[in-house]
Structures are given as structure tokens and as C-alpha cells.
Amino acid sequence: MSKVREKYIVGGVDLYHVRNRNEQRVVRCLQDEIERLGVINIPPQVIEDAYALALNQLPARYTQQ
Image (tube, rainbow, N blue to C red):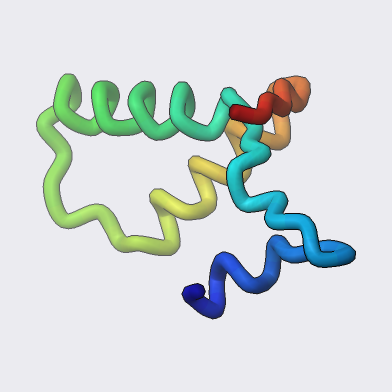
């Protein structure tokens, strides 16, 4: 099991599959907007900041498989 996944183990239960549905929606929207604007060479920190800001503006929508 990966170290990242191990962080989601609580009381022996794997919670890795519980996700905020808005995460993938924001990823798609950011990618679409970058492509639409034709922007290249965006520093990783800028993308990370935009991702975090967008997620913080939306209500959490957690789901599990």
C-alpha cells in the first residue's frame, strides 16, 4: 500500500475512496480554462493555489464508492 493511501487508514478502515466530488469537477474546469486561454508555462504553485481557492469556495460534496 502506498504511503499516500496509508494516510487514509482510520481504525483499520481504508477511507481513500471517500472523495469530494468537486475535486474532479474543479480539475476539469481548470484544465478547460487553461486550454481556452491558451496559457502555457503556468507555475505549479499558481495552479495549486487556483485549485485550492476554487475548492474552498464550493460546498463539500463527499461521496463513497
